Image (cartoon, rainbow, N blue to C red):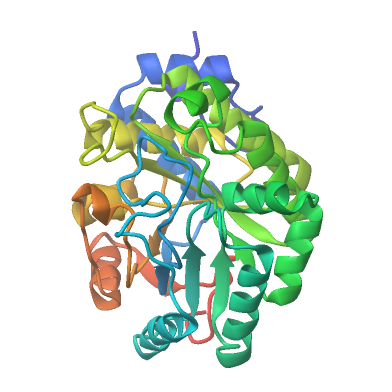
Length: 356
């Protein structure tokens, strides 16, 4: 059996296997895993810097045919609660973001049956023409896969059109758990695991950087989580296109999945295991949006080196009744009080001018 004190990753250590990770999960306690993850974090990032980004999540629509059981945000087609942002409304949100010091938007919606590829291209072109200084981090793999099927185009062709229109990078949304028997039970109309990975691989081959995520704590097992991590690690070995991994916990309120929310202890323990397992992804992000600022601060000692986004606007988690908000000055204070140096970054983790 592998012992926690044997996990000292470096140039002379082979990476942790799935079976070894499972043994660690079962046998190591919260503090043992945290200690090892924190040590490995400093092997990767020797300076005591914690990064963050100033951006805004903009949901251009909430209309979606996916009907995911874990989602409290979407509205089905025809719902009076459904909306599609006009360019004028979108413009107002971007201008507010810029005034608050933002320099990126996370643009996501749903699988809207009536929006074609021209809508997406025009939205991107409008943003790039009017706000060229704002990076567009947009459209999760399920959205891109949906457009591919809708227009009978290859994933590569859809991505090229979006890139030509102004897309800068892709978020890791829609991953949930990259195990098909889980996906079929919680999001049966969404793309399967192999398609999610295919979108990301093709994006990387076209020069886009992306993030990877995991939503855990619903119906999956620890074995399912480790299969997810293995698939992410294998693709990263192949392309090197993931800039960060972001694990966050399922929020059950107002959803169709009845379960207890994962504890902060389990969140931190799995965060640490993710840091140890994903030896080829440089950055691990703390999820203060679901865990709150205090646990987010603790995550900086359990393997995380990034505090994520200021989240000027966030709607999806908020729909579950969980709503934490942190302005930039508070994020910097939280990082500093933990003994780290806060630094603003771009999506690719380049420090912005003045932060170097």
